Length: 265
Ligand SMILES: Nc1ncnc2c1ncn2[C@@H]1O[C@H](COP(=O)(O)OP(=O)(O)OP(=O)(O)O)[C@@H](O)[C@H]1O
Image 1 (cartoon, rainbow, N blue to C red):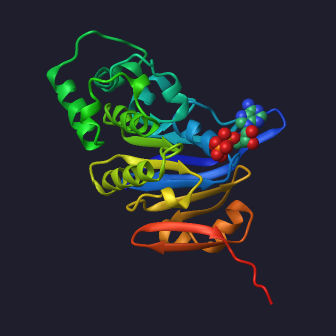
Image 2 (cartoon, rainbow, N blue to C red; image 1 turned 60 degrees about the vertical axis):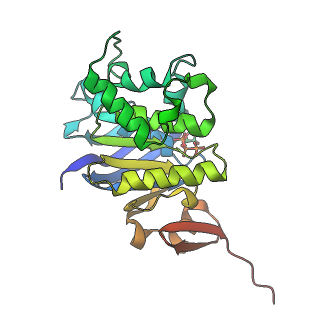
């Protein structure tokens, strides 16, 4: 398996603040990673580095075999699918869902064209179907619910057939049913051997889709633990990540956590 993403002692500083601190991390082809951490732990910063949107202040970052800083990021970025709140904010509210998905490959290049080939349209249709939103194809993005927007965004991020897929809090803002539906869809993607190497950022273990293979746990910009999920995600590592005593359950591929109850004598 070759490395899709490789960080060596990567650090990002802004003034006095250290956003991520000497992170060493390797994501290989076929792996599905969860990045877990509290608010402010550095998850979004890490994802921006992985997306070739942010350069480390020190350390080295390799993405898809290219060393960040020595490669034209405008050639690299179309090979990376990104779904995040920051990307969603840039989507025009009056854009039709079908057009939004089909135009993705040109949008990441900062280009636009009026006509697309049949094969582009067929791919967009098939992704909308895979994400369960075919019925929304003729709606405009601005009128969709939060859950519908998340699905359309993921379809769009897959349109370029990326080699690395980055999902920043895909279930944020969804109700319970919406979260469960999305977790199921992401689980299908995770188990699909044709899916790209994937990194999913979340605050909640309940949002980890079955099929995710690895976890990286962050606290104050530094790695608490990282590795295969079944060995690494434990009550101890989770408690260290969130700075409180937590108990953790794993049942039928899903995770659940809550504060450990105090013993009353
Ligand atoms: N430009 C900046 N200057 C100083 N500090 C910053 C800057 N940008 C981000 N930070 C801080 O860096 C830390 C990490 O931010 P980041 O957005 O990566 O965390 P996060 O884990 O994604 O948080 P959340 O879960 O709340 O989205 C936070 O404490 C944030 O306030």
